[in-house]
View 1 (cartoon, rainbow, N blue to C red):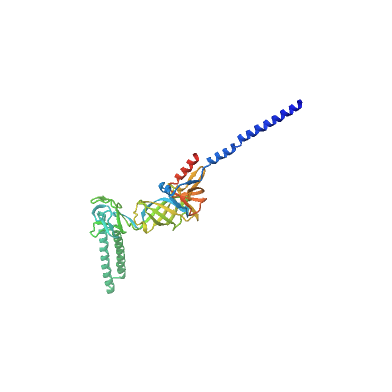
View 2: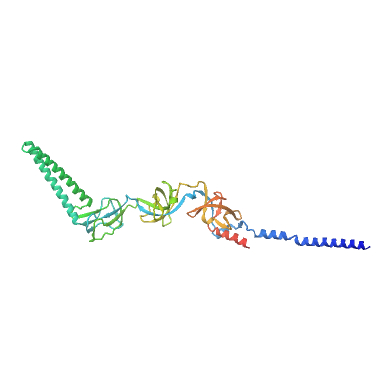
Length: 381
């Protein structure tokens, strides 16, 4: 009887234990589903739904990713200069006083035209020397004619004739020297002034000369340049300059924002020891006629050396960072989708895409950061 009671108690305990385990299982079973749902809700979405009106109101610009050679684009600051044979510095060839000025800044000038006269004692001495040399030539010619006549008559020996002939040669050489000196000094026809003459055609770009001013020899009085004959010099880091080749295409942006086409004329290959930069000479095209010497412009040189062919490039604003990922926002039917990309180099406001994006894909460019902010907002919520 006692054993039966013990068996009954044990059976009852087993039933109670089973019921308790079933209840606990029911209470704890939904927990993993709740955690999974919480993790799913915490994961950031890769899509941003926005209508066409919303895109327009947010001023988000959509453009196609372009193919190109981004690694070849080298931005540089450049200076507009006249070519060496199109600019002249005009100086006084002798010390004296500025007596007359015929041209002012901005006036057109022709090659060989006189801009000013400088009265100088040196000019008078040079003119007198030239006149004396010419007189000696005349005297030597007459002596030679006389000796030639006497030689024919047999009155004078041949040695006298040869001496007269040598004297004439010396007199002519001296006259040539005096004439060359007068020409180099630009002695005017009045015999007391030196003329300031332009060797090139163009316009007067500087005129520091003043009427009545005493100037020393080689004092700068005028500058003349031909604005149609220009060259542009750009300074590049030595590493970038090594990629530039003669004939490479260049885009020049002036102060007014206008872009002009140009070509690389030469690359010096010499690095300045102070600036550690190399000079590249650019030859502007027909669209650079509005440039003037001394002007600063921005150059974008498409270097052919080491260029990456068939790459994809996008505006720098199109690439955003979410966490540790570099992403772009690809246009979809309902808005945009986050696309992870691997970026390469940056240059001139553009970024090269190594992988993750094909050329021609429509992406958000300007104000793409608004889409990034929306993604981060959803993730935070």
